[in-house]
Each structure stands twice: as C-alpha cells, then as structure tokens.
Image: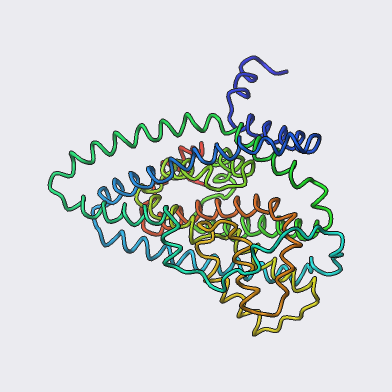
Amino acid sequence: MFTNQMVNKILSNLTFWVLLAITGGIVLGHLSPATGVAMQPLGKYFIDIIKLFINPIILVTIITGICGMGDLKKVGKVGGKALLYFEVVTTVALLIGIVVGYLVEPGVSVNTDAVSKGDISKYSGAPVSISWLQFFKDNITIQVLLFAILAGIVLSKYSKKELILKKIYWVSKYVFRGLHWVMKFAPIGAFGGMAYTIGKYGIATLLPLGKLMACVYITMALFVFLILGSILHYYKISIWKFLGFIKNELLIVLGTSSSEAALPSLMEKLEHMGCHKSVVGLVVPAGYSFNLDGTSIYLSMAIVFLAQVFEVHLNMEQIFTIIGILMVTSKGAAGVTGSGFIILASTLTATKVIPIEGLALLLGVDRFMSEARAITNFIGNGVATIVISNNEKMFDRGRMYKAFGIHKEVV
C-alpha cells in the first residue's frame, strides 16, 4: 500500500518525472510521428537555456578554485595529468571498439538495400584533418576555460583579491540558483527530445542495423562498468554509487541526447561529493572537448562495421593508421556540428580504403546511438574528475560518504 507520504515523495522526485517524460515522448513519437517531430523545440530550447549556464559556471568555478588552491604550480600539474588521462582512456576506448567490432562482426551480411541511403553530400567533401586554430575559434567553452585560468592566476596574485572574490561568490550563488530553477523543466526538455527522435527516425529504422545498435550499447555499458568501474574501484569508490548519485543527470542526457544539458549540474554534484572546486572547473570543461570515451568507441566500431559491410579487409598497418588518425580527430568532436559524421568522413578519406558512401548506412540509426555516446562521455568525465581529485589528494572522502548516504568507511 502506498501512503500519502510515499506518493508525495515520488511526485516530488525529478527522476520520476524525467522517466515519465521519456516514456511519454517515445509513445507520442511512435503513435503520431508528425506531432513528435513538432515537439523538437521543447528539447532544443531546454538545451539552449542550459548552455547559457555552462560558461558562467566554468568562469566562477575556476577563478574561485584557483584562488583557493594557493599553489599555482598545482594548476598546471592538474591540467597536465588530466590531458594525459584523457589520451590514455580514449585510446583504450578506441581499441575496445575495434576489438569488439571484429569479434561480433556487426557489418557482416548487412543488406544495404534495406537501409535508407539518405543525403550524405554534406559529408563527401569532409576535411582530412581538423584545424586546431579553427577548433579553438569555434569552441567557446575552451576559450572561457583558458580565460578563467588566466583570470584566476592574475587574481590570486592581487593583494585585494578578497573583495573581488566576495562578488564572484555572490554571482556564483545566483547562477546556481537559476540553474536549479531551470532544471525543474528537465522533464519537458526530455519529452521534446525523445518525441522528436522517435517521431523523425522511427523505431523501425533500428531493425536493419539492430546488430550494430546492440553492439554499440553493450560495448559502452561494458566500458562503463568494467573499465571506468575498475578505475573507480582502485580508489575504493563504487561505480554503482556514483551512477546512482548522478541518475537525474543521466536521464536528462538520455532524453535530450546531449551531455551539455546536464554539464553544469554534473559540475555542482562533483563538487558536492568531495572533488575540489578547481579540479572540477579544469577537468570537466576540458573533458567535454577532449575526453570523449563514448564517441571514441562509436567511431572505431563504425569504421570496422563499414569495412565489414563492403567486405574490405583491413590489415594491421591500416588498423593502426585508423587508430592514429582517430586519436587526433576524435579530440574536440563536441565542438563541431555533425562531428560524428565529419570525423568518420575525415578518417575514411584519409585511409582511402572504405567507400565514404557507407556513411549513408549510419544516418538512420546515428541519432539513436547518440544517447549511448553522450551518456558514456558524460560518465567518463565524471570519473576523470574523481580520479584527478584523488590523485592530487584534493578529494574529501567524508563529503562523498555523506553525498552517497554511506555511514561507514567502506564503499
């Protein structure tokens, strides 16, 4: 029997409403595709509003964090370790994608006639490499990150910094208060995003490439629980507890297919669970552009899939060439519109062994796989922040126990 207290607790739980919204979006998109597609603005505008909070939060978090860190050498040390960690873990993700692709062989016996070809003309002229200068110009998050680091360093040496910091803390309080109010509308954003996806692409589009879909989702789940789970276990932290702690954010990412939708909230929660403010401010924004575990898995699996579809045998030299290219081009994918296909097209163009027309096979299911990519990227950045915080001894385990609801020194 449900008591009034239990009912009230459920009805006041954001997780309940986001789940209900996602379910409603799937049902609407399936039963009335046109209406589902018309719901796109709900998801789009929600993400656009959330984006407004990302850069102010990065700015205030990094400035106050650096000023509170004391030792400026530590800032460079944290940044260096974060970049090294990103490269190692994303390379592991690339290798896992290729290994699983060859073990499961999702591209074998795919009937290409059964799949809508779509329009790939905009990808056919994709560049072979990414211009890092152009990437920096287009990626406002990286610009804000670097500006905030410089501002934090300058302010930390200013004799009257306390007066300025007081005003920054005041701004920070109201920025986060505004974020909390906007997050109340997360179910509406999740509903719009899911209704649009199902309405536009249809569940039926999953069937021809169902094996690839299942392969991608299962591989990313194994990566999260085995690789990222093992990394957290080394620091005596449970991946299950962490995922439970950020479950609302994960559902928002699932509903909107965008990690941006929950990025500010993730930064706040990581700080709440014991990660130092400066580490959160440095690692999360940088990870958003450079630590894309889910994207790395998807890219490597997609290339193996297309090679199998067109019966192209890749030798070891070609495989390592592909890995080398993806190690570079996959970085900064979040800052490029249509990044998945642009990077795939770049790699296919560079290797010149797999027909670029194969991208048409992925158009129908790419949107459905974007949820898996976004969630894996999102979790990966959270884990990276926890790892760097622990490694630098800038992690408050007592706050973590309190956040996780644990009353003993065992995780």
